[in-house]
Each structure stands twice: as structure tokens, then as C-alpha cells.
Length: 252
Length: 252
Image 1 (tube, chains in turn brown, blue):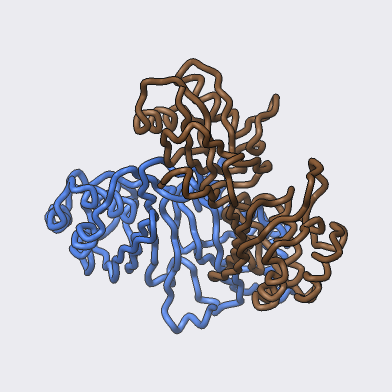
Image 2: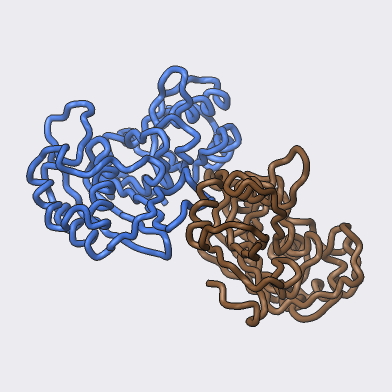
């Protein structure tokens, strides 16, 4: 048996999230099905973490153990040939045996994409969150600055599986505009359930002048989910990179 | 009755082309249906030209005569509220009575989008033409240069409705690369049936080294459709602007 890690992209609108669940097509199951149809064995694929229904990935990482004589390059091509539409592996390599996509992860980077235009765009409803509101990017950036650093993010977490601590470290949070699109790019040590979407929903309220930029600091300090903005829709969210320590090896 | 012109965008994957035809949903019919449900009258909407099934528009122009007390701004909003998903008007104005979206047009600009990557992208199969081939942009640009100017483009026209002349003027033809995407942007006085897609299909063969850049001049001179490359798929094609003479008035 060898330990293999893959990097993959998927269209979240075509799956009921990452995690396998009976009766719903998931990305994890798609990978496990492809492995089974190729190698004949049922193996468990570990993702770096779950993504919800509708959430996309440009660069998710997963790992699994397989017993095959196929080299990495052949295995990569063969798996892509067996995968259903909407998910593609773009890299695969044999990795140290103790590498685990979730346990070894040290951080993640997400981008939330908002489309701000007077009329609903005819394209890509599954790929952006559209708003007809004009957004004040300067105000959004001022609000975002309050979230950078190590904080208790309870105010930005949906009720989910209980955790020992809601303290997380956001190492960067940047906003970019390109014509009608605004991207909210956030990197951190880890994220609570719906945390990125709640940050996006709150910054959208700041951008519309409904919430003052400095109120974001007050919301954070409250640790009260009811103080933050709504959870922004899944369609705008992209997992764009999973970060691992340098000693887990090079992985292009 | 007043003459109105609109600028609109549509997702070509959701329509069987521009032109109304019994039993198939078209963009023209969508507009005529929206007008009828709003104003109670069946009017004919004239587009600047047809687009085929799967071909997108970022900025198509259409015109029609209506009898309504609604001002331009109200009419624009009301029509968007009545339009089906996948098509949006982004501008509307009352125009000179002799303006006709097709007859007044003096040129068009199209962009053909190619996605060049080793594996099929998981996103946007309806919005780009994917190729796993590496493309030599320099060669494609050298090939493209042969097509600029006034020429008989018979070699790049699919058999369609017969025309008095196959001479057209291509005023510019530029290629851009941004990461995996290559855009072929072409502007001209008018285009024969499938001309942009055949130019794209031919330049893709040049980019893969199957056709020498200078052979594009020979293909053009042959006036023989069999000499050019295949018609590239509809999914990559976008109508991005229809050009009108300055005296037809300002239209933002």
C-alpha cells in the first residue's frame, strides 16, 4: 500500500458537498468510485476538510492509500478518465506515509466572489453571488482589517459540530475589484463552520453602508452570531489552496 | 409607436440561438414574449444578426417598435422583470425612427475563448472551448495577420444562405493569453456564416503546428472551405459589440 495525495478542482454546483452521504452525490464518493472502478478496491479518500453543497474548489487536497503498480503519472490520467463530470485532478503524487490531507493541513485560503451590477448577470449564477447594491470597497477593507489576527470567531460561526475552541488565526484578508467582480480573499489556520461566508455576508453589509466598518470589531468582540451579517450564499465561495508544512514535501 | 433599441447579454447555452423557430426557445422569442406579457401586443424584435445555438452575447443590439406610455428607464426594468433566465437587457433607449438593429449595423466584434490545459476544466464547459493541446500563440498571431483586411472569405464560410459576395473586411484580429485562456478577438464589417468559428478552428491548427502560419494566406486565397480548419465549437464564441455609425446617436 502506498500513500497518495492529489490536488483537485470541482464545480460545487454539481455535488452535494465534499462528504459522502447516502443518496446524494458527493465529491468524496466520486473519487472513491473512480478508484474502485479503476483498481477494484474500495478505499477511503480523506479531504483536507468538507465543503458544503454549492461551494467550489480550485485546489482542494485529498489523500488515500492504494495498492497498485501504476506509477503516479499513469494513475493521475487513469483516475481522471474514470471521474465524473465536474471534478478534475490536476496533480497526484506518492507522499510520505504519515501525510494525511486533513490532519497535516496547516491552513487554507478561500476566495469569495461577489458580482455587483444593476441587473442580474445572464451568466454564471452558480459561480458568483450577485448583488444589485453598489459596494464601497474602502469601507469593506476597513471593516475587514478588524478580522485579521488571532481571535475568537464565535460571532462568525454557524451552529455546527461543537469545538473545543472557536479561536482561529486569520493571517490575511484582502479585497480586490475588477469591473463588476469583487473578490474577498482570506487565508487562515482554519475556519469555523460557515465562517468565510459569514465574513462575506457581514462585509457586504459594510459595503452597502448598513454596518459601519468599525462595528466589525464590536461584532467580533461580542462572540454573538446574531450580531454578524447573514451567511452569504454558497455559489460565491471557492477553496483555492490548502497549506501544508514544508516538511511534508514539495507538491507542485 | 416609438422605436426602441436595447443592448443585451445572453447565455447561449440556454437558447436555441437568436432566431425564433417553432418549438425551440430562442432569444428573439424570449424578448417578444416579455414585450407581449408586459404590453399586451405581439411585436417583432429585430436583432443585429443571428447567433447560433450555444453562442453567447455580452452585448447584442436589437430594436423594435412599441406603443407604451412607460419611459425608457421604467420599460428597461419592467422588461428585465419579465425576461426568462439567461438573458438580460443592460440598456434601453428610444432611438431615431429609421434605426434598425440589423440594417443600420456597420460592424461587429466577436471574441472566441479557448481554454488550453492538460486536463478538462471542471467549470464552464458551456463557456469555453477546451483543448489539451499546447498552443503556440506567436504562430497563431502570424497566421491571423493574413486575415486582416478586405478579402473574399469563402474558405472560412460554411454553406449557408447564398450571398451576392463573400468579400468582407476584417479590421482587426488580436490574440491574448491569460493563464490557461486564449482569446481571439476579431472585428469586421460583417461575417459570413460560421466565419469566426472557422477562423478559430484554423488558428487552433496553426497553434498546434498542424498548419504553418503562412499557409493561412494560401487557404484564404483558395476560397475553398475544405482547405481551412474545422468549425470550432459554439461554446467558445461571444458576440461582444455591434457597431453603428455615429449619426445613429449616442448609446451608452
